[in-house]
Image (cartoon, rainbow, N blue to C red; front, top):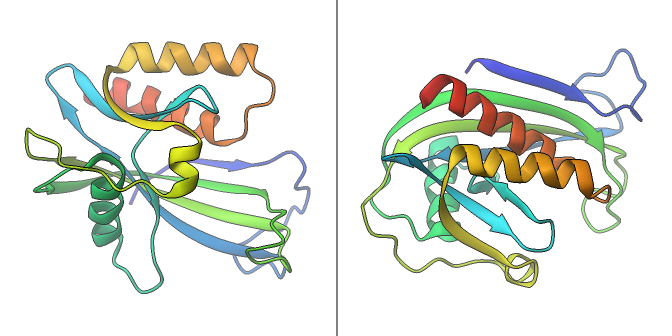
Length: 180
């Protein structure tokens, strides 16, 4: 899959950084790009005041496209996912400070595999995880330029934002440039 962008967080100064670095672990994720007419299927999160592509972590041993279908269905209720095509890869090296997950690691190597796909016209019931519900996540169809401008405004005016909004905004800009 084509590498769209590689981002290394400024706090990570190891110039020989690789996925095999002793303090890093790799997390695989998929992101779905679903466009119908002039709108894109996104998740809006109240807590972070941002739009993101539906998707998430791939389970150990799970094929990327199976993870895409599962995550898309869980988050949005999408049914009959078909015509899955690679769009690009977003690679990140970012700080990892979780005491719960991989406490021995200080660096997360995140690989976000993005795919375009088609879904049935009607969304079914989604199955958000507790933390997603608590963060106020909801599925929505949005004009892509509206989502980009909203995220850019949030980046500019809300300094407590994490790294994810930067990835998501970049991906939305690439989708607009290449697909819309």
